[in-house]
Structure formats: C-alpha cells, structure tokens
Amino acid sequence: MGFSWWQYNLTPCDRGLEYSIGRLDTNFGLSEEQFKKYVQNSEAPWEKALNKNVFEYNPAAKFTVNLIYDERQRETILKQKTESGLTAAESFFKNLDSKFNIAKADYENKVASFESAKSTLDARAAKYEQEVNYWNTRKGAPRQKYEELEVERVALNREIELLNARAQELKELSNNFNQALRERNEAANDYNRVVEQYNQKYGGHSEFDQAEYNGEEINIYQFTDSKGLIMALAHEFGHALAMDHVENSKSIMYYLRDSQNLPASPIPTAEDLAELKKVCKL
Image (spheres, rainbow, N blue to C red):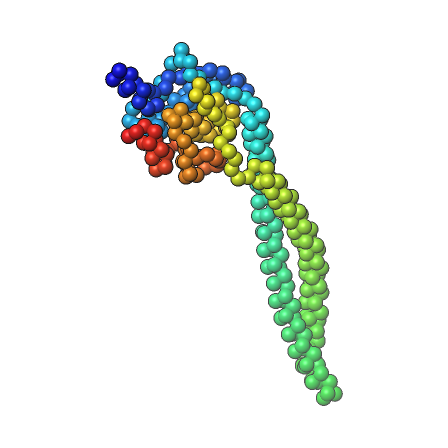
C-alpha cells in the first residue's frame, strides 16, 4: 500500500518520459536523424535545470514526437519568401537612396559654388557700373582708365557667358536631380507599402499553435528555422512535464510565439524555473 501511494504521488519529473519518433513528413526536408538531434537538443533546458535525465529516446516507446506538414508550414514558407523579397527590396532602396544622397550632395555643392561665383560677379559688375557712371558724369575717363574699364568690360562679359553656361548645366542637373528624387520617393513609397502589408499579415505575435502536446504525443506543425523548432519542442516538453504557460515573453513557456531573436539554445527564465519547481515539487 505504501509503495502504491508513493507511485501515485510521483511527479512527471520523477517518472520521466520515454519517446520515439513517429510521423515525419518529408516536406520539411529533415531526415529522422536530424529531427531526432533537434528533439534531443530541446530536452537540455529542463534536464540541465533538474540536473537529471528526464526524457529518453526509445524507438519502441508509445509516446511519439511527430513532424506534421500542413497549411501552417506552407504559410511559414510563404512568409520566408516574402521576407526574402522584402530584404531584396530594402537593399535596392538603400542602394538607390545612397546614390541619390551622393547626387544630392554634388548638386548642392555645385549650386553653392554657382551662387558664390554669381555673388562675386555681381559685386564686380556693380563696381564696374559705378566707375563708368562716375566717369560719364565727368564727360569721359582718362585714356588709361578707359582702357582698364574696357578690359574689365570684356572680362565681365566673358564671366557672364561662363556663368550662364553653368546656370544651364545646373538647370539640366536640377531636372535630373528632381527625376531621381521622384524615383527615390516612389521606391520608398513602394517599399513602405509592402512593409505595411507584411506587418498587417505577419506582424505581432500569435498563439502558440505551431505545436501541441496532447498527453499521448507531441506534434510539431510549423517552424521557421532550427532555433524555432528547438524552442517549439522545448515548449511542448515543458507541457509534458505538466508545466503551464508563464507570463514572461522571453520564457520558453510563454503562450505566444515569436520567431524573431530566438537563442540558439533555449534558456529557462526565472518564471520557467519557478513553474518547473512547482510541478516537480522541488
């Protein structure tokens, strides 16, 4: 009777869990050995915390871990392709934006240089006109002064011709710059529109329905990469130990899933460990 009472009060952590690999859909591109390795890696967070072997692979075990391909993984693949397209679009926009900024800086430097030259020329022309008017009021300038003013007149006309040529170049450059600006802004609008659509469809968190533990098996339906797969397995192994969800978004046992910034190996948080100690009666 005492032995039966002890058996009845054993926690899942005491009993442990033997499992085998069950259904393994080939659409995921994983061999049984690869999947088994990921499963074994997912045991580590709990076994390390408990300092004992809780989960044991046994090819004859009735409890199975399954990899089942359905619409969830198809959606994940579509999301990955969309992200790849977003990355390419972002790279294209950044490259275009970089070229635009270089062209913008070059245009602004040329405009500044033109304005400086124009200001200098305007000052020279004003001085020339002032001197001409001065000598006109005196019925003409001495020969030497007249020749100096004539040299300045010819030089000013030449400078005006050169400045007008630069103004025409700037006008064409301005047209090209404005066209580049429109293209850059159109690319930015297109990229932002795609990002907004992506965020509306895939942004935020969703319920942890990529996997399930039902008492007889663990089913994995969806993962983005190996880190996501190990996290999903670790989460379900936690449920197999009778652990419930916890509220820390960084916890293995958090009830929402997020494929971003996952660690290579899941690390239990304080909330995970508190829940583990509760169910294992430590």
